[in-house]
Structure formats: structure tokens, C-alpha cells
Length: 270
Image 1 (spheres, helix red, strand yellow):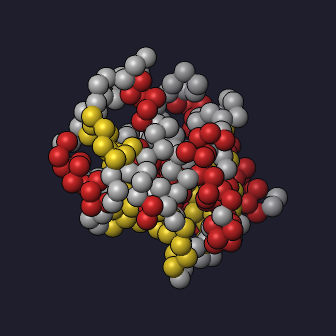
Image 2 (cartoon, rainbow, N blue to C red; image 1 turned 135 degrees about the vertical axis):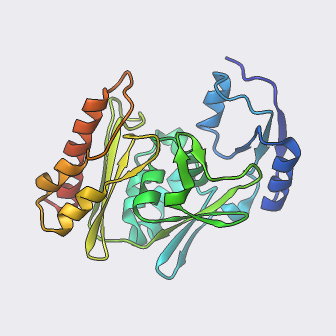
């Protein structure tokens, strides 16, 4: 299908992009990689009045070490994150997840900021951001990940607010991301991330709710000495996933338990 008519403007700075968003109003959208937005526009599920293209803002494309933090610019492409020696050394789980995003075309065009701002429940980066207590930095403020994701495709971003970078903690201990899908390049039906840091485990769940989920009950069970298979039984505690053509709610809960066990065991090398 053909998208509805819209205006287009290309920004050369974050300040200009913010001004353009103000000019066009709340129905304007930011264009980064476009791999989520453009298909929605073609199906007319999204009909923005204007697109503000930020791909010319070079300062948003970066990977920086900052003490015990790793700063990923909003325009950093998946393939850059996947292949970065800095990311592999400081937060290898993030490099692993980046390599699981889509196919080569998607990884060469898609961006960190685009995935975070789009806030799809099936997105991989939001899960890591939530479970690792990352900060989402915008042109106006810094938002903790647990306050950023509000609902399906809904964030704390204001109409003229732009994600500029995502700040993760350094964590290079045992880790694993397990992504269950029907075909190689599909979105996750359910995904589970496991990361050991600061003497404990962080467990995050993908696509089992309207926002990413941190499996606190699993983390607590592991802290008390439970085996992976025992702790993983708590992965579905409190979950209320929506069913779809690929999986019923009960099947998603089952996958959450099974994949959590696998993620922890594989992270441990067992």
C-alpha cells in the first residue's frame, strides 16, 4: 500500500529537530532507521502529518566508554553495536542481542534509539534497558528505563522530545539472550535475557506484556540459592500476555519458564 500524504523535513541538529517537531505538532514522527515506522505507514496503521529525518545528525551516532557506563548514541546502527569491540568487552550481552535483530538489511539501517522510542513489546533492546536499569537520555532530560516504557508503543517522551542516547551499566559477566521465533529473522514470540552482575542475576522478558518485564521473582529465587530450573518456574508469576496467531497466553507463559531456564543455564555454561 501507499502511505498517506505527509510533509518531510531533514534536521541537521538535535535543536533543529526539536523545533521541527514543535512546528508540525504532536502528529509528527521522528525518522531514524525507519524499519518499524515505514511499514506501519504503508499499511496506514500510522499516519503522521510529517516526518522529521534525524539521520544527518552525526553526533547521535556513537559508542562511548564512560567509567562504569556505556553510552550508545540514538543513531548507532545494530550492526555497529554487534561488531563493536567496546560493546563486546563492556556489555557483551548487548552485542549478542544486536546480532539477533532482524536480517542484514535491518541491522545495517535500524538504530538503537529507534527501537527504544518505538517501544514495541517484541523489541529486544527495551528488555535490556529495563533489566539493567539503563537511562534513556533525551534532548531535555534523563529518564530511567523503568519510567520510560508506559504501554504498548507508548513512552514518556514529549511531543518535541528526542532520544539522544541510551546509557547502560558495564556488565561483562555470564550472560545469554534466548529468542524463540518461528523463522530466523522474525520478532520474538518470547525472549529471555540473563545477565550476572554485582553478585546477582538480572532477568528480563520480551513480548510477555505491553512493556518489557523484569522477572524479579526469578532473580529473588536465584539469590536464595534456587537452581535454574527451580527459579525459572517463577518466570510466569504475574504475567498477563496477550495471545496472537503465533501463541496463546498460556503458551507464552510456558515459553517464559522454559526459556528462562535455558538462558540461565547457558549463561552459566551448563
